[in-house]
Amino acid sequence: MAKKPDNGLPARAADSQTFFAMDSAPRLSLKDLRKGARQTQENLAAALAVGQDTISRLEKRSDMLLSTLRHYVESVGGQLTLVATFPGQAPVVIEPVGEKKKKARKGGRDRAMAQHGKPGNPDKT
Image 1: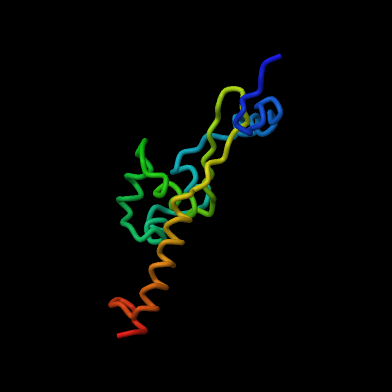
Image 2: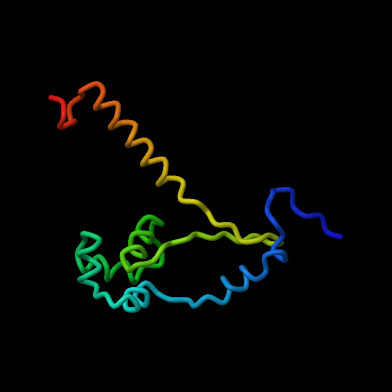
């Protein structure tokens, strides 16, 4: 009997339904997502505070930042989930850790500025 990898993750066979559902999911382009949400490039550009030409270029790109893709997907009403697959293991959802750290760091900086009355705080001059 094959030894289960010692990384705390279940074997893929134990979660084959999830894997099958992911593998059989429809493959759509960004343009397809936007059209499915009944949005024009102009509408989406306004929601993302960019020009229509930027949306056109995004829809043709093969490589972009995950944050850019996340904003695009959220603007058409979806939620982006990044899933990694490994041989012999169940798919793993990767958490957007950087977003949480940025929010916590910004909140801490704002509190420190408010407490010490540093420039940039509208309440203290």
